[in-house]
Image (cartoon, rainbow, N blue to C red; front, side):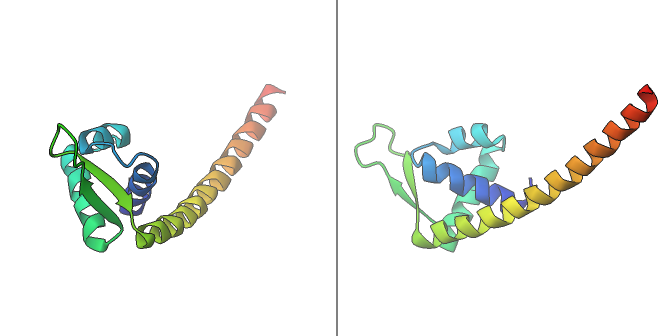
Amino acid sequence: MYEDEIEYRLLKTLEGQPDLSQRDLAGKMNLSLGKINFCIQALVKKGLVKANNFRNSKNKIAYFYKLTPIGIEQKTRLTVRFLQKKMVEYDSLKLEIDELQEEVNRLSI
């Protein structure tokens, strides 16, 4: 995964599940715990995410991650870029599939 994709997926996941632990995020995103920690710290430093401790949590290191307004804007920009990239990949793959299908059809005759 490239950095924009990691940032997009992390922002998307945190928006929907702000109470996930970093360990859960690492498993969900198939990244190391250290990478998740580094990325979250970077998002906090950029002002895209705010990390708050659970006040009543038995696990005092549990955090609640909330996207800031800037984080929501960045997620929107990343979503558009991610969609554009995936559309290019789709078009390329579709062309390749069509060419392979034509080749199979020619060989089957």
